[in-house]
Amino acid sequence: MKLLVTGGAGFIGSAVVRLAVSRGHEVVNLDALTYAACLDNVAPVADSPLYAFEQADIRDRAALDAAFAKHTPDAVMHLAAESHVDRSIDGPGDFIETNITGTYNMLEAARAYWVSQGKPEAFRFHHISTDEVFGSLPADPEVMFTEDTPYDPRSPYSASKASSDHLVRAWHETYGLPVVLTNCSNNYGPYHFPEKLIPVVILNALAGKPLPIYGKGENIRDWLYVEDHADALLLVVEKGELGRSYNIGGENERTNLELVKTLCTILDGKRPKDSGSYADQITFVTDRPGHDARYAIDPSRIRDELGWRPSVTVEEGLEKTVQWYLDNEAWWRPLQARHGVGERLGTGTTGKVSA
Image 1 (cartoon, rainbow, N blue to C red):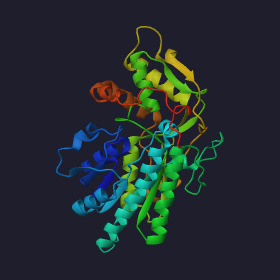
Image 2 (image 1 turned 135 degrees about the vertical axis):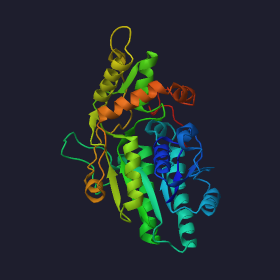
Image 3 (image 1 turned 60 degrees about the horizontal axis):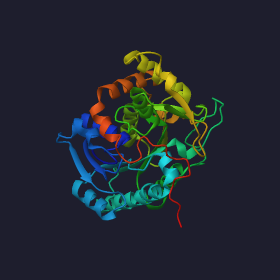
Image 4 (image 1 turned 120 degrees about the horizontal axis):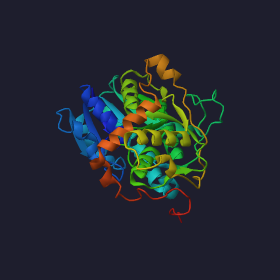
Protein backbone atom coordinates (compact mmCIF):
# COMPACT_ATOMS: atom_id res chain seq x y z
CA MET A 1 0.00 0.00 0.00
CA LYS A 2 1.21 3.52 -0.81
CA LEU A 3 0.29 5.95 1.96
CA LEU A 4 0.22 9.73 1.82
CA VAL A 5 0.83 10.79 5.44
CA THR A 6 0.26 14.46 6.24
CA GLY A 7 2.20 15.80 9.21
CA GLY A 8 4.67 12.94 8.96
CA ALA A 9 7.49 14.97 10.52
CA GLY A 10 5.46 15.56 13.68
CA PHE A 11 5.20 13.42 16.79
CA ILE A 12 2.41 10.96 15.93
CA GLY A 13 2.86 11.27 12.18
CA SER A 14 6.51 10.29 12.34
CA ALA A 15 5.65 7.22 14.43
CA VAL A 16 3.20 6.22 11.67
CA VAL A 17 5.84 6.82 8.98
CA ARG A 18 8.51 4.77 10.77
CA LEU A 19 6.16 1.85 11.44
CA ALA A 20 4.60 1.86 7.97
CA VAL A 21 7.98 1.78 6.22
CA SER A 22 9.18 -0.97 8.55
CA ARG A 23 6.16 -3.03 7.46
CA GLY A 24 6.89 -2.59 3.77
CA HIS A 25 4.44 0.17 2.87
CA GLU A 26 5.46 2.96 0.54
CA VAL A 27 5.12 6.27 2.38
CA VAL A 28 4.95 9.85 1.14
CA ASN A 29 5.48 12.25 4.03
CA LEU A 30 3.79 15.59 3.31
CA ASP A 31 4.71 18.20 5.91
CA ALA A 32 4.99 22.00 5.99
CA LEU A 33 7.80 21.79 8.59
CA THR A 34 6.26 24.27 11.00
CA TYR A 35 7.74 24.85 14.47
CA ALA A 36 6.87 21.44 15.96
CA ALA A 37 8.04 19.38 12.99
CA CYS A 38 11.47 17.78 12.83
CA LEU A 39 12.81 15.67 9.98
CA ASP A 40 15.13 13.95 12.47
CA ASN A 41 11.95 12.17 13.61
CA VAL A 42 11.96 10.13 10.39
CA ALA A 43 15.75 9.78 10.06
CA PRO A 44 15.57 6.01 10.79
CA VAL A 45 13.67 5.47 7.50
CA ALA A 46 14.70 8.51 5.44
CA ASP A 47 17.12 6.52 3.27
CA SER A 48 14.63 3.77 2.51
CA PRO A 49 13.50 3.42 -1.12
CA LEU A 50 9.98 3.17 0.31
CA TYR A 51 10.10 6.72 1.71
CA ALA A 52 9.55 10.08 -0.02
CA PHE A 53 9.20 13.58 1.37
CA GLU A 54 7.16 16.50 0.06
CA GLN A 55 7.38 19.86 1.82
CA ALA A 56 3.92 21.33 1.39
CA ASP A 57 1.31 23.13 3.47
CA ILE A 58 -2.20 21.66 3.65
CA ARG A 59 -3.50 25.22 3.28
CA ASP A 60 -2.02 25.23 -0.26
CA ARG A 61 -4.51 23.40 -2.48
CA ALA A 62 -2.31 23.52 -5.60
CA ALA A 63 0.55 21.86 -3.74
CA LEU A 64 -1.80 19.12 -2.56
CA ASP A 65 -3.11 18.46 -6.05
CA ALA A 66 0.48 18.21 -7.30
CA ALA A 67 1.42 15.75 -4.56
CA PHE A 68 -1.56 13.48 -5.34
CA ALA A 69 -0.80 13.54 -9.08
CA LYS A 70 2.89 12.84 -8.55
CA HIS A 71 2.63 10.02 -6.01
CA THR A 72 -0.81 8.40 -6.71
CA PRO A 73 -1.40 7.10 -3.17
CA ASP A 74 -3.70 4.22 -2.27
CA ALA A 75 -4.73 5.91 0.99
CA VAL A 76 -4.36 9.14 2.94
CA MET A 77 -3.57 9.34 6.64
CA HIS A 78 -4.31 12.91 7.62
CA LEU A 79 -2.43 13.89 10.79
CA ALA A 80 -1.21 17.40 9.93
CA ALA A 81 -2.62 19.78 12.53
CA GLU A 82 -1.85 22.46 15.07
CA SER A 83 -2.18 20.50 18.29
CA HIS A 84 -1.04 22.39 21.41
CA VAL A 85 -4.02 23.54 23.50
CA ASP A 86 -2.07 26.32 25.22
CA ARG A 87 -0.98 27.78 21.88
CA SER A 88 -4.58 27.62 20.65
CA ILE A 89 -5.65 29.82 23.57
CA ASP A 90 -3.02 32.43 22.75
CA GLY A 91 -3.36 32.27 18.94
CA PRO A 92 -6.52 30.50 17.72
CA GLY A 93 -6.21 31.75 14.13
CA ASP A 94 -3.52 29.26 13.14
CA PHE A 95 -5.73 26.43 14.42
CA ILE A 96 -8.71 27.57 12.37
CA GLU A 97 -6.63 27.94 9.20
CA THR A 98 -4.74 24.65 9.50
CA ASN A 99 -7.16 22.29 11.21
CA ILE A 100 -10.35 23.42 9.48
CA THR A 101 -9.38 25.06 6.19
CA GLY A 102 -6.42 22.71 5.76
CA THR A 103 -8.64 19.66 6.26
CA TYR A 104 -11.14 21.08 3.74
CA ASN A 105 -8.30 21.41 1.23
CA MET A 106 -7.18 17.84 1.91
CA LEU A 107 -10.71 16.52 1.44
CA GLU A 108 -11.18 18.37 -1.84
CA ALA A 109 -7.76 17.35 -3.17
CA ALA A 110 -8.40 13.73 -2.16
CA ARG A 111 -11.88 13.78 -3.71
CA ALA A 112 -10.63 15.22 -7.00
CA TYR A 113 -7.86 12.61 -7.11
CA TRP A 114 -10.24 9.75 -6.20
CA VAL A 115 -12.66 10.77 -8.95
CA SER A 116 -9.83 11.13 -11.48
CA GLN A 117 -8.73 7.58 -10.69
CA GLY A 118 -12.22 6.19 -11.34
CA LYS A 119 -13.28 6.09 -7.67
CA PRO A 120 -11.27 3.00 -6.69
CA GLU A 121 -13.03 0.99 -3.99
CA ALA A 122 -9.83 0.39 -2.04
CA PHE A 123 -9.03 4.10 -1.57
CA ARG A 124 -9.25 5.44 1.98
CA PHE A 125 -9.10 8.88 3.59
CA HIS A 126 -8.19 8.28 7.24
CA HIS A 127 -8.73 11.34 9.43
CA ILE A 128 -6.85 11.24 12.74
CA SER A 129 -8.43 13.27 15.54
CA THR A 130 -8.55 13.60 19.33
CA ASP A 131 -10.77 12.67 22.26
CA GLU A 132 -10.79 16.35 23.24
CA VAL A 133 -13.66 16.91 20.78
CA PHE A 134 -15.92 15.19 23.32
CA GLY A 135 -15.29 17.72 26.09
CA SER A 136 -14.85 16.77 29.74
CA LEU A 137 -15.95 13.75 31.78
CA PRO A 138 -17.04 13.42 35.42
CA ALA A 139 -14.82 11.54 37.87
CA ASP A 140 -17.03 8.42 37.66
CA PRO A 141 -14.77 5.67 36.24
CA GLU A 142 -17.80 3.98 34.66
CA VAL A 143 -18.33 6.96 32.34
CA MET A 144 -16.06 7.02 29.29
CA PHE A 145 -15.98 8.47 25.79
CA THR A 146 -17.50 6.21 23.14
CA GLU A 147 -17.86 6.81 19.42
CA ASP A 148 -21.44 7.97 20.14
CA THR A 149 -20.52 10.57 22.77
CA PRO A 150 -21.89 13.99 21.71
CA TYR A 151 -19.27 16.54 20.72
CA ASP A 152 -18.61 19.25 23.32
CA PRO A 153 -15.24 20.90 22.58
CA ARG A 154 -13.98 23.40 25.17
CA SER A 155 -10.81 24.95 23.67
CA PRO A 156 -9.99 26.56 20.32
CA TYR A 157 -7.88 23.47 19.55
CA SER A 158 -10.62 20.94 20.27
CA ALA A 159 -13.23 23.07 18.51
CA SER A 160 -11.07 23.17 15.38
CA LYS A 161 -10.58 19.40 15.48
CA ALA A 162 -14.32 18.84 16.03
CA SER A 163 -14.98 20.99 12.97
CA SER A 164 -12.57 18.94 10.89
CA ASP A 165 -14.24 15.70 12.03
CA HIS A 166 -17.61 17.04 10.89
CA LEU A 167 -16.19 18.02 7.51
CA VAL A 168 -14.81 14.52 6.96
CA ARG A 169 -18.17 12.92 7.77
CA ALA A 170 -19.95 15.39 5.51
CA TRP A 171 -17.64 14.59 2.57
CA HIS A 172 -18.41 10.90 3.10
CA GLU A 173 -22.18 11.40 3.24
CA THR A 174 -22.42 14.04 0.50
CA TYR A 175 -19.79 12.95 -2.00
CA GLY A 176 -19.27 9.31 -1.10
CA LEU A 177 -15.59 9.84 -0.28
CA PRO A 178 -14.41 6.63 1.42
CA VAL A 179 -13.34 7.76 4.90
CA VAL A 180 -12.49 6.32 8.29
CA LEU A 181 -11.93 8.36 11.45
CA THR A 182 -10.11 7.83 14.73
CA ASN A 183 -10.13 9.79 17.98
CA CYS A 184 -7.25 9.13 20.35
CA SER A 185 -6.35 9.83 23.96
CA ASN A 186 -3.17 11.63 25.10
CA ASN A 187 -0.09 10.31 23.33
CA TYR A 188 3.42 10.09 24.75
CA GLY A 189 6.71 8.43 23.84
CA PRO A 190 9.88 9.00 21.79
CA TYR A 191 10.17 12.16 19.66
CA HIS A 192 7.50 14.02 21.68
CA PHE A 193 8.03 17.74 21.07
CA PRO A 194 9.34 19.36 24.28
CA GLU A 195 6.40 21.64 24.99
CA LYS A 196 4.01 18.90 26.14
CA LEU A 197 3.68 17.72 29.75
CA ILE A 198 5.78 14.54 29.77
CA PRO A 199 8.85 15.85 27.93
CA VAL A 200 8.63 19.14 29.87
CA VAL A 201 8.74 17.23 33.15
CA ILE A 202 11.62 15.00 32.06
CA LEU A 203 13.76 17.83 30.69
CA ASN A 204 12.97 20.30 33.49
CA ALA A 205 13.83 17.62 36.04
CA LEU A 206 17.20 16.97 34.44
CA ALA A 207 17.88 20.74 34.30
CA GLY A 208 16.99 21.26 37.96
CA LYS A 209 14.01 23.45 37.06
CA PRO A 210 10.50 23.44 38.58
CA LEU A 211 8.12 20.75 37.32
CA PRO A 212 4.97 22.78 36.57
CA ILE A 213 1.58 21.17 37.21
CA TYR A 214 -1.62 23.05 36.41
CA GLY A 215 -3.99 23.64 39.32
CA LYS A 216 -3.86 20.84 41.87
CA GLY A 217 -2.80 18.17 39.37
CA GLU A 218 -6.18 16.45 39.64
CA ASN A 219 -6.99 16.47 35.90
CA ILE A 220 -7.18 12.91 34.59
CA ARG A 221 -5.94 11.71 31.21
CA ASP A 222 -5.85 8.33 29.47
CA TRP A 223 -2.26 7.84 28.27
CA LEU A 224 -1.49 6.10 24.98
CA TYR A 225 2.04 5.10 23.95
CA VAL A 226 2.63 6.62 20.53
CA GLU A 227 3.96 3.43 18.93
CA ASP A 228 0.82 1.59 20.05
CA HIS A 229 -1.21 4.39 18.50
CA ALA A 230 0.66 4.11 15.20
CA ASP A 231 -0.08 0.38 15.15
CA ALA A 232 -3.80 1.07 15.67
CA LEU A 233 -3.87 3.73 12.95
CA LEU A 234 -2.37 1.39 10.35
CA LEU A 235 -4.88 -1.26 11.33
CA VAL A 236 -7.80 1.15 10.86
CA VAL A 237 -6.63 2.42 7.46
CA GLU A 238 -6.26 -1.18 6.28
CA LYS A 239 -9.33 -2.81 7.86
CA GLY A 240 -11.63 -0.13 9.28
CA GLU A 241 -15.22 -0.01 8.06
CA LEU A 242 -16.00 2.87 5.71
CA GLY A 243 -17.68 5.84 7.35
CA ARG A 244 -16.95 4.46 10.80
CA SER A 245 -15.00 6.06 13.64
CA TYR A 246 -12.82 4.26 16.19
CA ASN A 247 -11.74 5.52 19.60
CA ILE A 248 -8.14 4.61 20.44
CA GLY A 249 -7.10 4.68 24.10
CA GLY A 250 -4.32 3.32 26.24
CA GLU A 251 -6.60 2.11 29.05
CA ASN A 252 -4.21 3.96 31.39
CA GLU A 253 -5.97 6.70 33.34
CA ARG A 254 -3.80 8.77 35.67
CA THR A 255 -4.08 12.18 37.30
CA ASN A 256 -1.44 14.63 36.13
CA LEU A 257 0.07 14.59 39.62
CA GLU A 258 0.25 10.77 39.65
CA LEU A 259 1.87 10.84 36.22
CA VAL A 260 4.52 13.37 37.22
CA LYS A 261 5.32 11.48 40.41
CA THR A 262 5.79 8.29 38.37
CA LEU A 263 8.19 10.11 36.05
CA CYS A 264 10.13 11.39 39.07
CA THR A 265 10.41 7.88 40.49
CA ILE A 266 11.71 6.54 37.17
CA LEU A 267 14.26 9.37 36.94
CA ASP A 268 15.32 8.79 40.54
CA GLY A 269 16.23 5.26 39.54
CA LYS A 270 17.87 6.01 36.20
CA ARG A 271 19.72 9.23 36.99
CA PRO A 272 19.66 9.90 40.75
CA LYS A 273 20.14 13.42 42.09
CA ASP A 274 22.93 14.14 44.54
CA SER A 275 20.30 14.46 47.25
CA GLY A 276 16.53 14.15 47.44
CA SER A 277 14.06 13.22 44.73
CA TYR A 278 13.07 14.90 41.50
CA ALA A 279 9.59 15.10 43.07
CA ASP A 280 10.97 17.90 45.26
CA GLN A 281 10.89 20.08 42.12
CA ILE A 282 7.10 19.75 41.64
CA THR A 283 5.47 23.19 41.50
CA PHE A 284 1.77 23.92 41.17
CA VAL A 285 0.91 26.79 38.80
CA THR A 286 -2.25 28.64 37.83
CA ASP A 287 -4.58 26.36 35.92
CA ARG A 288 -5.23 26.63 32.18
CA PRO A 289 -8.50 28.43 31.26
CA GLY A 290 -11.26 25.90 30.55
CA HIS A 291 -9.04 22.95 31.55
CA ASP A 292 -11.04 19.74 31.00
CA ALA A 293 -11.27 17.65 34.17
CA ARG A 294 -11.05 14.15 32.72
CA TYR A 295 -10.64 12.26 29.45
CA ALA A 296 -11.11 8.51 29.25
CA ILE A 297 -11.69 6.35 26.19
CA ASP A 298 -13.77 3.22 25.89
CA PRO A 299 -11.84 1.29 23.20
CA SER A 300 -14.38 -1.53 22.90
CA ARG A 301 -15.12 -0.95 19.21
CA ILE A 302 -11.54 -1.17 17.94
CA ARG A 303 -10.86 -4.08 20.30
CA ASP A 304 -13.97 -6.07 19.38
CA GLU A 305 -14.10 -5.29 15.64
CA LEU A 306 -10.41 -5.09 14.72
CA GLY A 307 -8.70 -6.95 17.57
CA TRP A 308 -6.45 -4.10 18.76
CA ARG A 309 -5.17 -3.65 22.32
CA PRO A 310 -2.37 -1.46 23.69
CA SER A 311 0.87 -3.37 24.24
CA VAL A 312 2.21 -1.51 27.28
CA THR A 313 0.99 -0.12 30.58
CA VAL A 314 1.66 3.53 31.26
CA GLU A 315 4.46 2.60 33.67
CA GLU A 316 6.16 0.46 31.00
CA GLY A 317 5.72 3.15 28.38
CA LEU A 318 7.04 5.90 30.65
CA GLU A 319 10.11 3.80 31.45
CA LYS A 320 10.83 3.51 27.72
CA THR A 321 10.16 7.20 27.20
CA VAL A 322 12.44 8.43 29.98
CA GLN A 323 15.25 6.21 28.72
CA TRP A 324 14.78 7.54 25.19
CA TYR A 325 15.16 11.14 26.36
CA LEU A 326 18.22 10.25 28.42
CA ASP A 327 19.77 8.64 25.33
CA ASN A 328 18.79 11.34 22.80
CA GLU A 329 19.87 14.74 24.09
CA ALA A 330 21.19 15.56 20.60
CA TRP A 331 17.58 15.38 19.36
CA TRP A 332 15.80 17.44 22.04
CA ARG A 333 18.42 20.04 22.94
CA PRO A 334 18.09 22.10 19.68
CA LEU A 335 14.29 22.00 19.86
CA GLN A 336 14.28 23.82 23.19
CA ALA A 337 15.42 26.96 21.36
CA ARG A 338 12.30 27.09 19.17
CA HIS A 339 9.72 29.81 19.70
CA GLY A 340 7.58 29.40 22.81
CA VAL A 341 9.22 26.20 24.07
CA GLY A 342 9.79 26.42 27.82
CA GLU A 343 7.51 29.44 28.20
CA ARG A 344 4.19 29.50 30.03
CA LEU A 345 1.54 29.66 27.32
CA GLY A 346 -2.25 29.48 27.32
CA THR A 347 -3.04 31.85 30.18
CA GLY A 348 -5.52 33.69 28.00
CA THR A 349 -3.76 36.99 28.64
CA THR A 350 -1.01 37.04 26.01
CA GLY A 351 -2.78 36.07 22.81
CA LYS A 352 -3.49 38.12 19.74
CA VAL A 353 -7.03 39.48 19.82
CA SER A 354 -8.77 39.75 16.46
CA ALA A 355 -10.18 43.13 15.48
